Length: 180
Image 1 (cartoon, rainbow, N blue to C red):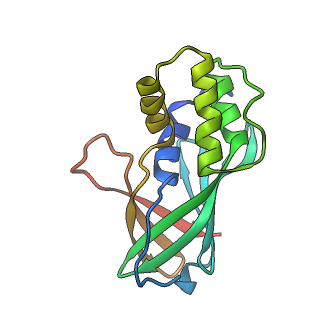
Image 2: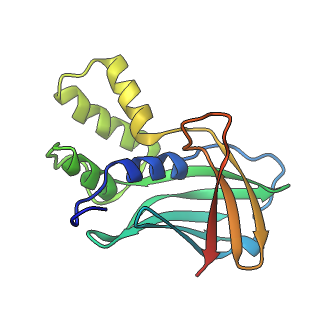
């Protein structure tokens, strides 16, 4: 972060990492994951809060404090975590939209279902004159991958997870979180 300025690149990368939707078959919530896990990336603290099969992802940074991003359910088995995101917090997207010069009061600081959120941001982009195909591409870029299973390892108070936000598809970036 330079001169107290909010970096647009990092939150988008974190969104891609954070927004993962998938379905788990015959998997269980791993109670050893329960608690808050934090990692710092480019001055941003990424927080995963695991609670018996439910999770919430938060982002903390000096200029805007702590803000929730996503929440849903998870299952974990065989060193894989499958996330099923069911809600997106609109306040974070207001920060992103303001940073790129889009002034909007359409996105409220509340929890949205996935469908509600897609409708809301589609409305914003339609109002800006984007075509339907451009809107789908923008949603994909803003939200990121919608179906990902993350590998993880747990060693005491250290949680390591792979990250899907590498520009090289063959490269696995591992993020290390510590229990708070």
